[in-house]
Image (cartoon, rainbow, N blue to C red; front, side, top):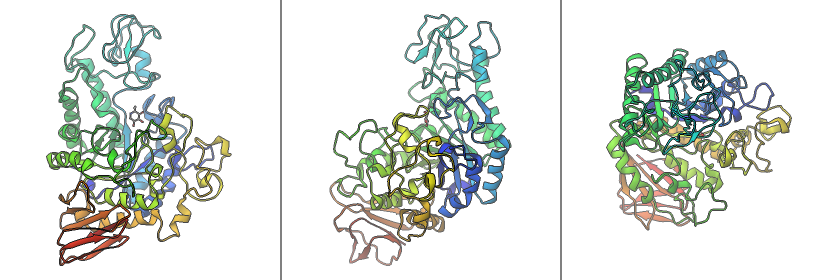
Amino acid sequence: MPTWLKDAVFYEIYPQSFYDTNGDGIGDCNGIIEKLDYIQDLGCNALWINPCFDSPFKDAGYDVRDYKKVAPRYGTNQDLCRLFEEAHRKGIHVLLDLVPGHTSEEHAWFLESQKAEHNAYSNRYIWTSHCFQPVKGYPYIGGECERNGTYMLNFFKCQPALNYGFLTCEEDWQLPTDHPDCLATREAMKDVMRFWLDRGCDGFRVDMAVSLVKNDDENKSGTCAIWRNVREMLDREYPQAALISEWGDPQKALKAGFHMDFYLNGGDDGYTSLMRDYSPVEYPPQKEDRSFFRKNGGGDINRFLEKYVPNYTSTKQDGYYCLITCNHDTVRPRYNLDERELKIAYAFLFTMPGVPFLYYGDEIGMRYLRLSTKEGGYYRTGSRTPMQWTSGKNAGFSTSAADALYLPVDPAADAPNVASQETDANSLLNTVKALLSLRHAQEDLQADAEFEVIYAEHDALPFVYRRGKILIALNPSTETVSAPVDAAGRNEIFAIGRGKAANGKITLEPQSFLVLK
Ligand code: NOJ
């Protein structure tokens, strides 16, 4: 286990929209370098950067054309290596985004693979043996290539599936996972990892980590075996490199060798009940939003805990199950939570076990904007707008003309920005800073310390939990509430709003959060 994860707090950067230093309307590597002091001051000591590699950008870079080349719009490989160096100088680790399940249809491997004549890349992707033959149970494309066959897709049309083999082969064109050409795909992905690790990167966020082996069983044993093999390589060659999976199933991902697995939005994992109790594709929400952190939502923390606790308990020895404020695929939490509600929600996220992830802009409460799709974003586009640094031109993101921006900045007169929140002691930004500095100062609030539910009722607040020797109580509602929890002898070390512990009770005023040691 990389030791630096114990006190890591990640900042996710969508590079398109973070900071533009050359005035072309899109963010770049140098922009991230310029803002490292900001990130450090915020209290984040690790980055996850969404794919920044050469790509036709039909899926925002998740359609990689060259894994070993930085997309020219972000700069050069040297710029990215300088980012690693400058980040390390400030004690910040950097994860890149590895997309192992598919490439762009413009990747050199695919251009070879689609040729009629057999070659070294013919089996790098999954092809049937005839141009009219379907790929049963998976999306596929026919009629576009020289080769007499159809090929399997892993996501959008632009993303043909790489071939790691089938756990059970049902057709003659399906190869087993130990076929030399399938092992070659795995080795090619390790080669990509070594390429960036050798240049100073600290690990990877792994896209669609569950998607490698086809016809996999319920336990995903084919895919898990590949990740265990990758982890062995890391343990041997890069023991401080970290891997986090986009999987949302820690009982599989962490046992397969990932150090961390993400809580994802949309699954049946309880996460949506915290802040997003609505469907991201339904506008306006079709049902009542009972998100736990809405002050009038009447939510129930048990909807989360019932899923979280068994996952946490059964995997805490293996790695970290990680909570996020949001990500580039998720509607920003500011969509349905106001600033005070966000403060309480973040206070919870940043005092839980595992390694927290903060999505750029959530620290100032950037809004979700209704925009038409960009680079395959669809509804996700609204969470990918330029970072709002100042109240000046283009929110301080870029000096380009407004119509040349990658996406428009939030046009609202009261759109939040970093500069104004920095000078307001009560701002969301300063609350995030205070929370992260509390986390860094208290080992019991970091990744490893034990978590225990102390008080969580279906129809009553507050919610009280313990981290190591620290007791935490929170009340997202507009009522004053109390719980029969004896906190005698403890002192308050942090609070949002007001609460007190006396006479065998913890009492919290409306929308409050209390940390007792
Ligand atoms: C998950 C990524 O987070 C998403 O943005 C992307 O579109 C798909 N995987 C396909 O790579």
